[in-house]
Each structure stands twice: as structure tokens, then as C-alpha cells.
Amino acid sequence: MDRWQAMRIFVKVAETESFAASARELHLSPPAVTRAIAALEDLIGARLFVRTTRSVKLTAPGKRYLDDCKRILADIVEAEAAAAGSYAVPTGTLTITASVLFGQMYVLPIVHEFLKRYPKVNGRLLFIDRPVNLVDEGIDVAIRIGHLQDSGFSAIQVGTVRRVMCGAPAYFDEHGIPEAPADLKNHRIAASTGAWVSPEWRFANDQRVTIHNWLQSNSNEAAIATAVAGLALTRVLHYQVAPALREDKLRIILAEHEDPPLPIHVLYTEGRQAPAKVRAFVDLAVSMLRARVG
Image (cartoon, rainbow, N blue to C red; front, side, top):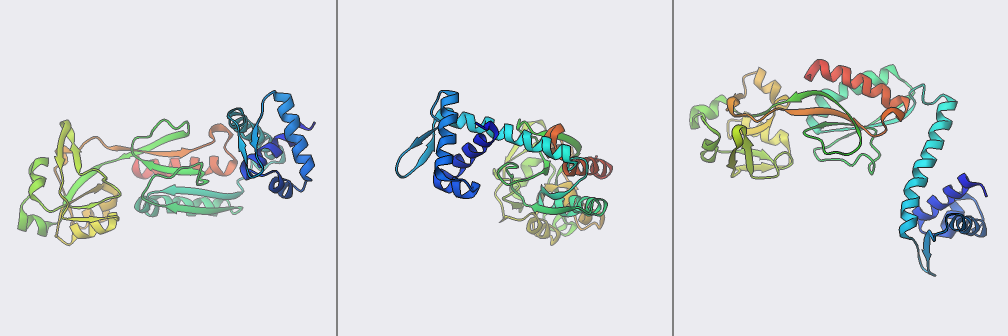
């Protein structure tokens, strides 16, 4: 029995949950697929599938074996690619994700430079203000702001970013300037629901304030625009309001009460075994981001 081929057949049956569909996709006869699975089960000494006239489902040993097979097959593909040289020269499609504003302001220029350097690579960007599952959504590299959970992915910190409270001079002229986080209860707040899910905002020294939003939006841009218009205060990441701060359209308040800055990481899934396109982009992104946000 060709063990590698049998594993390929097993993985395909697990994915399609069908012997017949697997045979069609692999250009094999249905009896050949059946024989390969039976041979694997004899070799392992355990049933891999529960088969009925209507369904094919993995057993518990089958689920464990599926994970191992996928890893082994991926290693084989990687070894073949390395021998062929594709892991030496960046090629293929590179998929990158980041939050919307950070992606547009910081990541997009890096992608432009990368694609100019490596013309055999195509870029795919997913700028979205929600956590993205790198494996499920086929992401090669993510730029994440915030504390990371232990995911087993490779992560390189490139800098930090402050969370700031800010408002327009016109707002302060009309409503005054809060002197402590507790004063925010008496002010209009425009907030992005994507950025701050909880109504309880935390500040330094374990200060906590329950915020009643005057305006809620699913967009950071809308919250910032509301603050720039002098209608409310908002709390966002510093880079998101940097242009407005430079032009004195917004001013930071309560800086002495800010909680510690959030880390910024470049995150990728394959570690040292990452293909050349990922390694090259990570190197460039780390260098350029540390120069701008480090």
C-alpha cells in the first residue's frame, strides 16, 4: 500500500464525508478508495469511519488520525516545495489582515513596497475591525493590536499604542474638561461598539467608569468625526486621531489616567517553516513598523 496516497484518500473522505465524491475528486474508482481506507484501518487496528447508507463520519480515532495526516502531508508538500526552490523565492498569493484604520495607514504602504520588491507575489488584504481566525480564513500574516492569547502562532512585537480620551476645543468651551475618569459620566460620549464592547471603561490604578454612550457606532471613523465636530468625547487608539491632533481639531485629556499602552504584534502561523513570501513580508513589516510605531 502506498501510505502517502492512502493518507491523501483518507483526508479527502474525511473532508467530503463521501467515498463516491472522494473517488471523483481524486480520479479514482470507488473500490480503490474503499480498499485504501480498509487497508489503513487494518494497519492502524482501529476504525476510522462510521459508515451508513447515508453518511460517512469520523470516529474518535479517525479525528485524531486526521490531524496527524494533515500535518504529515503538509510536511511532504513543504519538502517538495523546498527542493523545487519555491521556498527560496517569494511567489504566490499573500493574505494579510489588520484593523481598518491601522491597515490603511500603516500596513498598506508596507504591502505596496513588498509587492514592488517581489513581483511574483499577489497581495490579498482583509482590513476588518474584528478578530480573524488565521487558519479558518486562510490568513498568512496578521497585525494585531492588544494582548495576545496563547495561540501557538509566531509573534513579533513591533511597538505599542496608547488608548486616549479626546475631544474638540469647541466641546471643551461648551461643556468643560473632565478632570478625572469619573467625570465622564457627566459628558457626552461617542464610542465604537467594535472597539469597546463593554460599557465599563478601565483606566490606570484600577479606575472603572460605566459609560452611557450619547452616540454608538460600529465605526471608529464615525466616533472620531463626532468628536471632531465638537459634539462628544471619544476614546480611541492614538494613531487613529493622530492627524486630528496635529491639526488641533482634537486634544487629549486624562492622559495621566491612561492605562498601559497596548502591544502591536506581527503574527503568523508557520514559524521557521513559513514559505519565502511570509518570511520576506514579516521581515519587511517588522522593520517598517518598528520605524513608525516602535
